[in-house]
Image: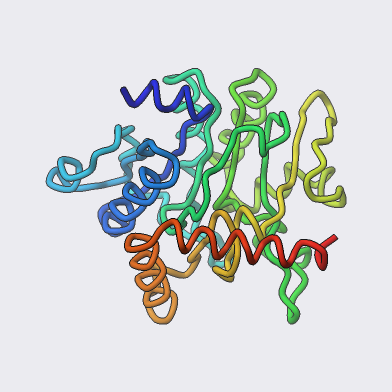
Length: 263
């Protein structure tokens, strides 16, 4: 049944989590089922037996020595498991994979065609007035949203990303930013081929909205640290559970109103 839903959707959504992110995974499951009509595939980085039994999604065993929690010299979490997990999803289902962070929520249904036929789709960081994303020490991209097609070109890119992640002291996000430098100056939404690889940078205000304002995918990127981000996540997740259509319609209206000012 779930495979049929994946095929109808056109891609598989993947999140990865350990026992510390179990609650987020449960909320994400409900959110994705409500918005997309399917469950995600969950990469198990260290869930307990009770937690595994409580989840409805298909699990992929990614349990290791916990090295994914280590930090780089610059202080960023390495999270180097991601490319291998994406490759396993594509191998298992023969479909494209959309890898999202577990601290994200969807507010509108995503379509495979939104990636414009690209082998790889990524999102830059959202711009801040105080800091240009190009100057960030952990790369110009935010790897919380990453799409890979089920193509040989995408697999070659993923294999290279996986190899680089396994061999160094850089985060997956910084490595991904380095690998896509040739596309850095390209306009958002343009699918451009270089070296046989078709890559598109999608607008973060829609697909990786860290301000939680009007995106189809909103990202609570400091959620694991608690504080205001946790309270905001609980408030928005609750609102989406109680009135998902109303909340989604409000954000869709905000996107339409903002569009003339973003061209």
